[in-house]
Image 1 (cartoon, helix red, strand yellow):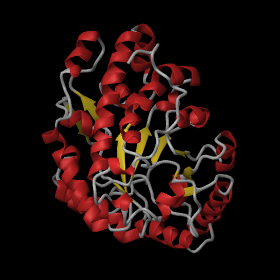
Image 2 (tube, one colour):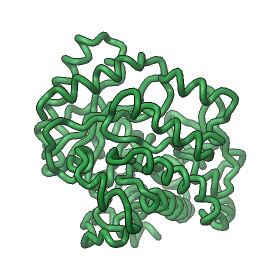
Image 3 (cartoon, rainbow, N blue to C red):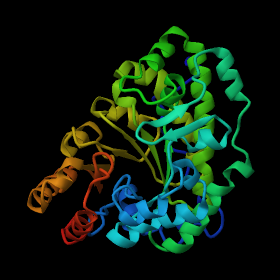
Length: 372
């Protein structure tokens, strides 16, 4: 997929064909009318559905106990651990959705890329990708059925336990994965990645197209196995200008979502950090719902995205500000969210690891007591 052939503004959905999903898929039955799915489809249920990014673990003592002695990527590929970790916050907090416990670099790992998550640092690549030869080597790697089996088995187990509670599939967006591949690890400004897209646009296009194929395969495997929605998470897109996002990134996020959209009416969500200036372009890649971080009030986002359901956007810092301040802030978020046709309450980013789990439980209970 070259930049000249990409269509970043194309967001028309295919004709829904739910028969593309396997027989017995949760969207055919138990999750079809779940509050979260209804909200993702633009309906407003009686109470606002709520879940938290990074709810699977981090702040939970039972998660930390379970993870003792197990490396992150090993945990992500152990169906028994994935199932238990994903279920823990659902049981404890009573949230309206489970988010599949994974990491954005999992598809790279199972495709055979030499990547590891270093505690205290994040994903680190053994060989940064900077040249056409580097990309050509990646092109030899694909996601095989065998490589995806731990993912598929985890989701089968989860949907059997979750019943009418939807499971949200998860993948990192192509730009964020490309940033890690080019930088060789975490970077605050993604200078090498942003330089590559301009200095070697053909190499960039080839890299992004390969990642988009990988991401699309990873997401569709989750959906076909039983996930009821899919979220594309772009951690680093906020560092891009709108022009660069449209030219060098949006076409590949759209490409990654094409296979998901081909399955039929499967709700899709796109979220990025610091992306208030990109919200319209992020929606145009072909998603149903746009996630908004805490920097942009939801009524402002709704004005920029008329008719689009929104997800967000409690400031994670408020989780440690005391319940009176938290509920006052959440009331403002819920009120702003009424400007959209539907609203799923979430954080404007992930749960901080030092959050008191009881605060999250009480917040979910309080939200469920409010009228949508």
